[in-house]
Amino acid sequence: MKWLFAPPSLDDLIRLLKAWRFWVLGALVGALIGAGVYSSAPPLYRARATVNVDFNLEQAWPQETDRQQFYYLEREARKLEEIAWSDTVMQAIADLDGKVTVNELRDDKLQLGQPAEAGWHFYADDQDSRRAAALASAWAQAFVEQARESIKNSSGLNSFIQIEITQAANLPVGRSLSLSVYLIAGTAAFLFLGAICFLFFDFGSWKKNTE
View 1 (cartoon, rainbow, N blue to C red):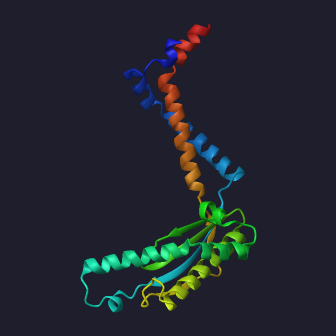
View 2 (tube, helix red, strand yellow; view 1 turned 180 degrees about the vertical axis):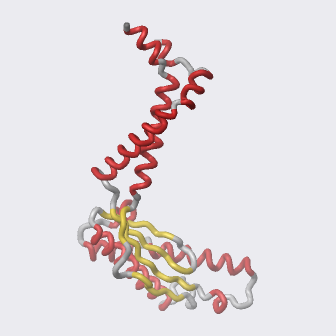
């Protein structure tokens, strides 16, 4: 059994680098495995809704320093992010969908992208493309309604902030992971395992021991 755990020698490394047939065949087989996994168990659909957030920095802090303006943007963005994940917004989505809980939305279904000035992206994942689009649209609309209500009531958000939905219908929907990711992962995994076997398992010695 010593051959099983024998460290690779310099000759083994050289032989591996010269084994171009192994690399070509391994890349092909790994890509086929990745494609097979993608076809048999495809990733979830992901839909994206977009909300434009304008902090109106020039009006809110016309004579302040850059540092104060930076903290203002960070603070207000954090408040808006908390609204996006608030119980009120999550419950509004759950009530509209009727089949999902608040915990499932937070843990599995929803993702928030680019919480800063300009476009905020609201992503929703689901096995059904239409349901993913409905969840993303509902999230964006619930967020805008709650944020506007907070601005109107002066309950934390600056009154100069303007929020509007720029895309909540006919949303772009695609797989959360592309086929190329599976192809690359399958190729890398197969080549890695093949190289490990090639370097650490002395098949020549194993063959002699079994004869």
